[in-house]
Image (cartoon, rainbow, N blue to C red; front, side, top):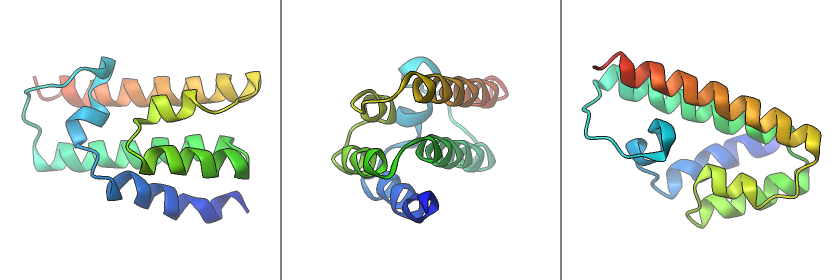
Length: 112
Protein backbone atom coordinates (compact mmCIF):
# COMPACT_ATOMS: atom_id res chain seq x y z
CA UNK A 1 0.00 0.00 0.00
CA UNK A 2 2.77 2.44 0.90
CA UNK A 3 4.63 1.69 -2.32
CA UNK A 4 1.97 3.27 -4.52
CA UNK A 5 3.31 6.74 -3.63
CA UNK A 6 6.95 5.99 -4.41
CA UNK A 7 6.80 6.68 -8.16
CA UNK A 8 4.94 9.89 -7.48
CA UNK A 9 7.49 10.98 -4.88
CA UNK A 10 10.41 10.12 -7.10
CA UNK A 11 8.78 11.97 -9.96
CA UNK A 12 8.10 14.97 -7.74
CA UNK A 13 11.76 15.23 -6.80
CA UNK A 14 12.87 15.39 -10.42
CA UNK A 15 9.84 17.30 -11.71
CA UNK A 16 10.68 20.29 -9.55
CA UNK A 17 14.17 20.27 -11.03
CA UNK A 18 16.28 19.85 -7.94
CA UNK A 19 19.88 20.40 -9.00
CA UNK A 20 22.12 17.45 -8.28
CA UNK A 21 24.84 19.34 -6.41
CA UNK A 22 22.43 21.40 -4.32
CA UNK A 23 20.53 18.33 -3.16
CA UNK A 24 23.44 16.01 -2.70
CA UNK A 25 26.45 17.82 -1.40
CA UNK A 26 27.32 16.61 2.12
CA UNK A 27 26.86 19.18 4.81
CA UNK A 28 24.38 21.13 2.73
CA UNK A 29 27.14 23.03 0.96
CA UNK A 30 27.32 23.44 -2.77
CA UNK A 31 30.42 22.22 -4.49
CA UNK A 32 32.42 23.33 -7.49
CA UNK A 33 33.75 19.84 -8.00
CA UNK A 34 32.93 18.32 -11.34
CA UNK A 35 31.50 14.85 -11.09
CA UNK A 36 31.93 12.36 -13.87
CA UNK A 37 28.76 11.20 -15.62
CA UNK A 38 29.08 7.89 -13.77
CA UNK A 39 29.36 9.69 -10.41
CA UNK A 40 26.36 11.87 -11.27
CA UNK A 41 24.39 8.74 -12.04
CA UNK A 42 25.49 7.17 -8.76
CA UNK A 43 24.53 10.35 -6.93
CA UNK A 44 21.08 10.35 -8.47
CA UNK A 45 20.66 6.70 -7.46
CA UNK A 46 21.61 7.54 -3.86
CA UNK A 47 19.02 10.34 -3.93
CA UNK A 48 16.29 8.06 -5.30
CA UNK A 49 17.10 5.38 -2.73
CA UNK A 50 17.05 7.91 0.10
CA UNK A 51 13.71 9.28 -1.06
CA UNK A 52 12.23 5.78 -1.26
CA UNK A 53 13.59 4.73 2.13
CA UNK A 54 12.30 7.86 3.85
CA UNK A 55 8.93 7.46 2.17
CA UNK A 56 8.68 3.86 3.37
CA UNK A 57 8.93 5.08 6.99
CA UNK A 58 6.00 7.49 6.59
CA UNK A 59 2.28 6.95 6.97
CA UNK A 60 0.14 7.55 3.86
CA UNK A 61 -0.87 10.98 5.19
CA UNK A 62 2.75 11.90 5.88
CA UNK A 63 3.72 10.67 2.43
CA UNK A 64 1.19 13.04 0.90
CA UNK A 65 2.51 15.97 2.97
CA UNK A 66 6.07 14.99 2.06
CA UNK A 67 5.22 14.84 -1.65
CA UNK A 68 3.51 18.24 -1.49
CA UNK A 69 6.49 19.80 0.28
CA UNK A 70 8.95 18.42 -2.29
CA UNK A 71 6.74 19.51 -5.18
CA UNK A 72 6.64 23.03 -3.75
CA UNK A 73 10.43 23.19 -3.85
CA UNK A 74 11.39 22.30 -0.28
CA UNK A 75 14.58 20.34 0.18
CA UNK A 76 14.22 16.85 1.57
CA UNK A 77 15.44 17.72 5.07
CA UNK A 78 13.03 20.65 5.35
CA UNK A 79 10.19 18.52 4.02
CA UNK A 80 10.89 15.80 6.60
CA UNK A 81 11.20 18.37 9.39
CA UNK A 82 7.75 19.70 8.61
CA UNK A 83 6.16 16.29 9.29
CA UNK A 84 4.91 15.22 12.69
CA UNK A 85 7.13 12.15 13.04
CA UNK A 86 7.02 9.74 15.95
CA UNK A 87 10.28 9.24 17.83
CA UNK A 88 10.71 5.88 16.09
CA UNK A 89 10.21 7.49 12.68
CA UNK A 90 12.64 10.27 13.58
CA UNK A 91 15.29 7.71 14.48
CA UNK A 92 14.73 5.74 11.29
CA UNK A 93 14.86 8.85 9.10
CA UNK A 94 17.99 10.04 10.89
CA UNK A 95 19.70 6.71 10.16
CA UNK A 96 18.63 6.86 6.50
CA UNK A 97 19.88 10.43 6.12
CA UNK A 98 23.20 9.60 7.80
CA UNK A 99 23.73 6.61 5.52
CA UNK A 100 22.90 8.79 2.53
CA UNK A 101 25.33 11.48 3.68
CA UNK A 102 28.08 8.87 4.05
CA UNK A 103 27.44 7.54 0.55
CA UNK A 104 27.52 11.06 -0.89
CA UNK A 105 30.74 11.89 0.95
CA UNK A 106 32.33 8.77 -0.50
CA UNK A 107 31.27 9.85 -3.98
CA UNK A 108 32.65 13.35 -3.55
CA UNK A 109 35.85 12.05 -1.95
CA UNK A 110 36.40 9.63 -4.82
CA UNK A 111 36.49 12.69 -7.08
CA UNK A 112 39.30 14.40 -5.17
